[in-house]
Length: 221
Length: 222
Image (cartoon, rainbow over all chains, first blue to last red):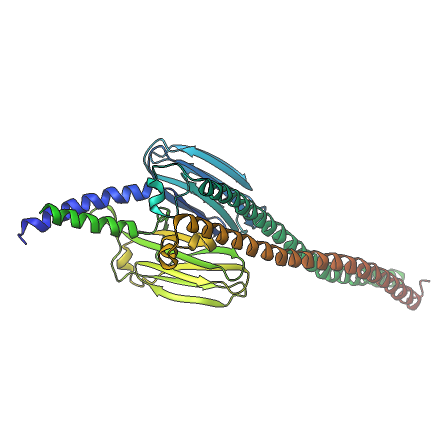
């Protein structure tokens, strides 16, 4: 192979790779993650997007404190697309007008001692087909295939609904367990407090009369 | 000449096509930082995680694929805090595990870098993608292995989805039982505590009066 050939092939290959990487970045998909957000911390996630793609960000706080978090979304130019403070859950949709890296951040900086668990679902574009050939289809779908597509979409709705219920249940269970702990600590604490206060009362009262007696004795003599 | 270029292009196309979809999302990780993700899943569910790391190159002022020496330590804990996966992978890796108990599994990532010079004060960029249950299936592979037609593959996907729904529903039932136990325990504790508190108050009141009465009698004030 001539020396010039590998360089040319390498350059063309790199350009092709870059182009395909960009296409890959713009392809549909998404991420669904649940992460821990420590107190006074902020965590950011970034996603490169193509122009014209519609994306949706759903988030929900599952455990911690008052179950709220600050969230903001920025476009590649730094413009704030969405900014909310102390939200328990929300959903934000937007069509990407600029190609580039979009950033969304969750902030727990307002809280000094409660770490939170946050769930987010970042969906981009449409769901990709299970076989790459399906997207290059030229003929119409048969009845069986249309039925499959309908059932698939209905099942997607069911799964989304299940996720929603799972998150609500996790949140409620977290609150119930917190309540249980608070009741335990409070009962023990109040028992101790009660005993301490009653014994102190008696001793204090006794000390009043002991002093008065001594003073009275001193005055009389 | 054209054939070689074409072949190279095809190879690159296949290679890039082989990059798992969804590795677009990334976050920054500090050198000693540990990032944990939680997956609440039913039992017998497969989870596949893909990650790719990039390190900031000061010369090119951009993030470049990390050196092969820099790896990530992946640790997965099951709901009982037992470690089910604890392995070190390279700068690009794929980890898989199947849950055997339903509940919250914790996936933790941190870099294995001990030398400060590797990071040079910068951050590591980690691209992460976690697929759970039916989304973890590679349908192209299933179609090739079982020789399924397109329609059969679609039906297979529906079957997998329904199975996932069933597993999730069973898990829901199990979780609801735990939730009910917690609520009933709280109810019991509140009831028990109210009774005990009343008894303690009465007992303390009686003790106080008797003690003070005997004290005043001794002091000849009563």
